[in-house]
Image 1 (cartoon, rainbow, N blue to C red):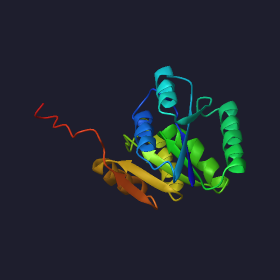
Image 2 (image 1 turned 90 degrees about the horizontal axis):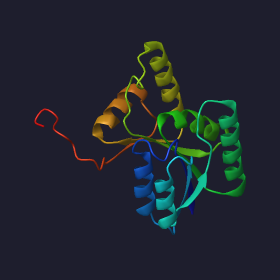
Image 3 (image 1 turned 90 degrees about the vertical axis):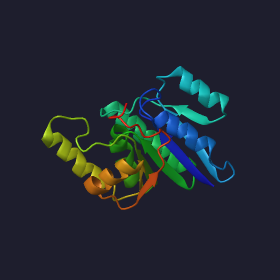
Image 4 (image 1 turned 180 degrees about the vertical axis):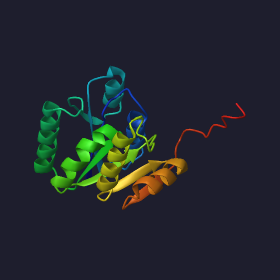
Length: 180
């Protein structure tokens, strides 16, 4: 059995919480075990996890500070000690800059889901966005990189050139902005 540990930076922001629910609900429970590690910032989402009998653990917000990073290292180290066939799954760019390096250093398999990737990372400072892109490209040498949709797949391939890039279907219909 494969043990997937999904690290969510938030239970209320972005498409990641919805993607995790879809993924867990549509996977074979006899082959895959999923644990969602999530900050306690959306009680409705946590209630959904309870209702659907999805295992979860409340963690501190994943951010770049000594307390958060030390706590996350401790959590991942405990996971490594207590489980076999571990796959760390990061959702959200910020979380991935913390989760993926820890997984790589502990020699764990990792998967990162991109949703809404942009070359600028939403930052106006060109130096900072270039630095993040180089760091991201470096981290994409390990594990599996997942793009949600064709546009994102093409942009990630061009910008980051990951070792193992997979495209999954974006369940949101394509909107014809000019016509609407």
